[in-house]
Image 1 (cartoon, rainbow, N blue to C red):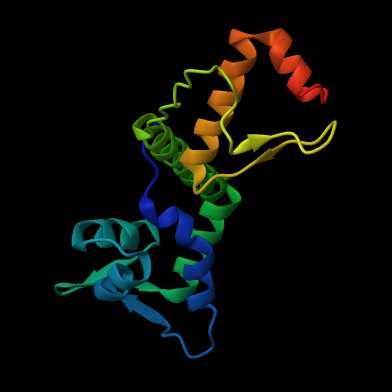
Image 2: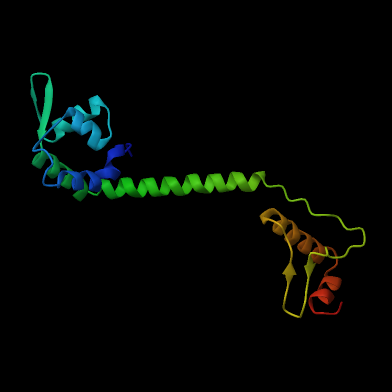
Length: 165
């Protein structure tokens, strides 16, 4: 699938700007550059797609032609596709950033010589667990310590959980 132009996601904003009563009836290349946030060559291509014309060295297009062109683009589904692509891309980038942060986080559980639970982990009553921690990494460390304690001696873990200790 070919890349969508970057201005497709701004079509509603551009239409709103052109629908203002005091917007100019004719747009030149520099107006296209500002509205669509594109460079000179892309602005000239857009003008020609809007049934624009050249007067001397100046490229022009009528506002109504531009609005008609943008409505056609919007109705074709290209705008929604561009917005969807941008949302999906943002989600992938956020997931990658979160994954990188998670990979850089080091969880080092404390080894206890008496094979007991860390004092920050306790069961105040049957069915209740309290864990004290300073930050997210501290919480994950305590959870790993709890899981390690359970894996190393499940019978003792069961006694602690059920209030036997």
